[in-house]
Every structure is written in C-alpha cells, then in structure tokens.
Amino acid sequence: MTVYELKQFLQTKWTKIREDIFNNEYKLMLVRTAEIPKPNGGTRLLVIHTVLDRLIQQAIEQELNLIYDENFSENSFEFHPGRAAKDRIKKAEDYINKEA
Image 1 (cartoon, rainbow, N blue to C red):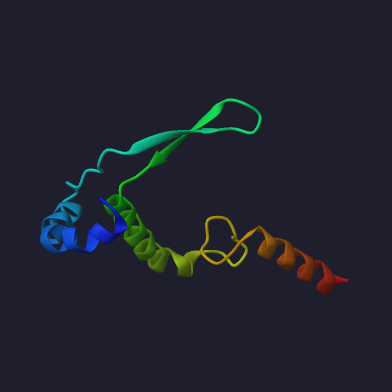
Image 2: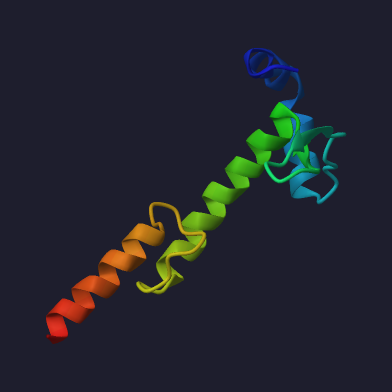
C-alpha cells in the first residue's frame, strides 16, 4: 500500500485497527528488507515498515511526547524532538561563558 492509498484504506478499516490497538491485539505487518552497502564493505540490513505501521508508530510517538515532554530535563538533548547535539554544545558554551 502506498501513502496515497492509505486514506481510502483507513476509511474502511480504521475502526477495527483502532479497536485492535486499544485491546493490545494489533500486530505489525510483514516488513520489507533491503541490504544497503556499507562504505567500508559489507552490508547493512534496512527494515522498511508498511505505511500503516509507520503511521501508527508516529501517532503513538506524538502522544508519548505530549505525556513525557514536560518531565524531560532541560539538560537532556538525546531523543528529544527539536533538540540536537549542536544545542547541547551551545548550552555548554553559554554555561562556560556565563561562569567566566
């Protein structure tokens, strides 16, 4: 199923999918895999989830972020939406300059 086909699919199947999710009965669909060549030789296995599974995972992530975002430390930058390593470096530089 493509992203473009998802809307029509959900219009007929969403009630059952939602019920399965809330009853802990939803099962991820079969994934596709592809081997990606590494620069230094060898390959890396890439797992490609279905469009529906990616949508569900993204929706769950957004809900969890709303719940846990307020509990994140101001000094936490890993796996936090809108924060990156460069932000951590900037905060450390600001702290050093403030103390100087």
